[in-house]
Image (cartoon, rainbow, N blue to C red):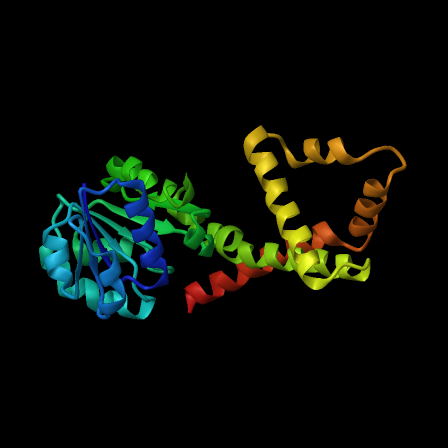
Length: 263
């Protein structure tokens, strides 16, 4: 397959590197206003250009990864060159399938893509949704974004909620790691040691769930002995409102994102 990425900032660049590493693309076209920093990626299969139309004409799949404020003008500028033979993917938050279809046409396959910042290290939790035509190409989208993490196909109406869980969620987990660090420092560890203890324990806990497929409580039970230190710590955290605070934080973020959508 031949892929064009329109807008190669931090996110577009991470996607490009994932595609290059996986070797999925027969040809990859990177289109951006600033091409100098992309030249190191150029090869027999990777072409760098500042001409969006040139990139689109040569591609089967077009991935838009530009700033939300720029997408309207960019799509207007290229819409005549996008056909139903293309599959269009977009990472632009808040720019829904209906808006894209109104510009590009109802018969164009369209897939919305919602990755998170961990895409830069190949660990993104990426959500995908599509129009009816785009559903025929969803397997291709999964293969592209599975190369930079993990994917889940969801209905588009759940994209707002997924943004809170997966994108804002990165910050929530960072705050939990920081809190664990603060506890470790209070117990006598140096800051750098505390960070290693917290982040690798967090990473290991997630990998345990991924590998086992277990519910979190099953893994909690494995390390929670009767009258032990783990259960005392868990009970105190719950007494202080840990789970309630997390749930309420998620719901508050969801309320805010819906306010922004209405605005």
